[in-house]
Image (tube, rainbow, N blue to C red; front, side, top):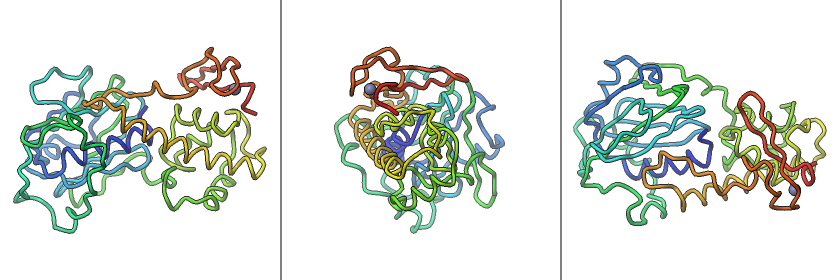
Amino acid sequence: MPELPDLTVLSEAFETALTGRVVTAVTVLEPLVVRATPTEMEGLLGQQLTQVEQRGKFLIFSFARDRLVVNAMLTGRLGLAAPGSRAFPKTAAVVAFDRRTGEQSPSSGPPARRSRRRKPPAWTRRPNVLPPDDEPVELRYRDATRMGKLYLTPHGLDRPVAGWSEQGPDADDPTLDLDAWRGRLRRHSGELKSVLRNQEFVAGIGNAYSDEILWAARLAPFRKRSSLAPEEMDALYHATRDVLARATDQLRDRVPPRFEVEVRDFLQVHGKGGQPCPRCGARLSEISAGGFVTTFCRSCQG
Ligand SMILES: [Zn+2]
């Protein structure tokens, strides 16, 4: 499941590679994943992409008029590919873009909207990371379980996006300081892993990074939030920020050029049940519940 670090890196890549390009074709192979009418999807044709952002577990593609919000859920993956290249497995939708001309298309949005584009992050300037400007490119969405959703919101229409309005601040939001964290944490009860994964508490953390954060904070996943001492609440804050920042940096170095494969091999504990704990050497425990794996160390997480 893509989480905040994955989506941050994808938003940087797609914004750098795709903004300024015009949509030349839209193909929906799995209508189940799309929340829009075929006519609305066709309406993307000729529109220029102006911005790509990450928010919680969502990616937002802003076009000259319309907006496409992607929630990949469990198995949805986005990637870039050259037109005509072999399809990704379980491809559900494809948005094709023209080569980048550097000119604004006639249908593009007001200047204010374009000027929000960020400076391309340094990592995207490495050779062969992004498709060349003078070639067309496809943004492909694949989804083995078809649980993810692509919400197209045509200009002037208010289409609800499930889970959007309930979100707390992003877990790496600069305005989420230690005081704000303590305040939010006190309002959420239950097991720590569930609290971290609750998007209403903070947004962007899922099954994998909640395990990594709890290991870094030396806190057991099934511990009740109400049992935390003040210094443990603070340790959880610092672990959250550190783990997400480090993972985002790792991914900037490691993402494959097509972006559609999730890189997780650098994680410390998640999915590594039975292996030695990288901190204390004890065997890592792994518990499966409802299709979700939780990995932790009974020896050094208390
Ligand atoms: Zn340990």
